[in-house]
Image (cartoon, rainbow, N blue to C red; front, side, top):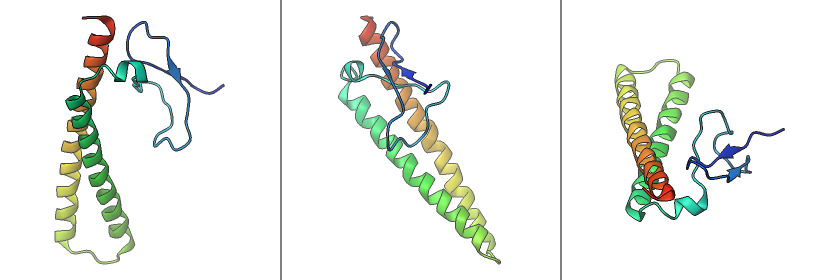
Length: 116
């Protein structure tokens, strides 16, 4: 039986299963907000979350491409590794920013969904 992901708002009975085109498979500990509760999140918080996630995705792609390039080259200059570390550091910062934005959206959905 496939795993189902429940809405993170308490007492909401909505769930979702795996979907075609999902970036990550459903795993234990993942969060999801159903469409009914997502509508309750302030548009500015949604916009911030979308931008933060997009910025992380761009840096993640760049980091992966640089790692592949580094593995494919026989001789790599020391400045390449310095740049790789800078990209990795910025990637971690953007990941934290995206997580904070998601937590903000989640908090708003829970508060507004439960009437707090």
